[in-house]
Length: 406
Image (cartoon, rainbow, N blue to C red; front, top):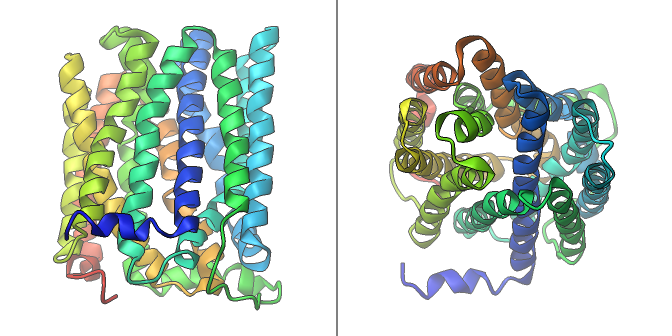
């Protein structure tokens, strides 16, 4: 692939707007994650409460999965996303107001995050379904890698910026995050969609559960998204980064931001490589290999006492993760009809989108009993075991050779 091919796809205005929206919302939520993690740990000095932050984000998606998927397939997806982003922005601005006025507590943080999680649950499935209605099937793998690049670029900037601004005060972090989320809503409203099927199914019990039935009958999709769920469930080391930054590596909030940026840096470089040179062969084996490297990097981070080695391990973790993300997202979107993408996407997000939050809870809960190092080490070993088991349970994935003929 020549260096001139990548800009060609960026002539698509809606793709540029979607990438801008992903950058805006990613910066906002990475800043938000740094501020909430540092603030609630400074209040409680408890790993368990760091885990609770992940749990209250997981519960809305888990409880509302079937509802939000059906809504995404029955109503205008852009309207759903814009409305959800506005509600999220208001919630984040409430955190800013509470921090400025001094009435913020650990309970109030968790309550506000829970309501932000509800709004985020409704925007997740329609956001996933936008890309196939913006680019052609032929361009989808490259577009998926490019949107991943945009996302990871933002994830690099967000944590460091959040950590830097937190030294001024948590209120300023929340204020800027809220404004960026509202900007995302504006960008989404200008996107033009094509190939949208405008014949929603009647609201029946069967149609509500159709996403689960569809995935159950597609072993490749079921295996791919469940692999991510269990791998990230055991590999949720990032939840404990505030402890590593303050107690083990002793690098402060700005160092915490750098740790959070390291996986995104690895993911950004890898996603750029994938955008320039999409995966052509042995994609199934490549995905499993990437998740094994994810587990190995988690183990190295767990036992590291060096800031530089920890950064390197997180860099590899992010690079390996984005490979499996691009492969999984392409498989799921290309094998799902448009009128099913909301419901399939909602189940997909329950597996993938919430695996990080549930993994954070698992890591915080385990760390409360075993300590942070043992918790992360155990998670890395568990990730590798899951990969080996999934290679036996889902041989269809292992034998996938190409993505462009799915």
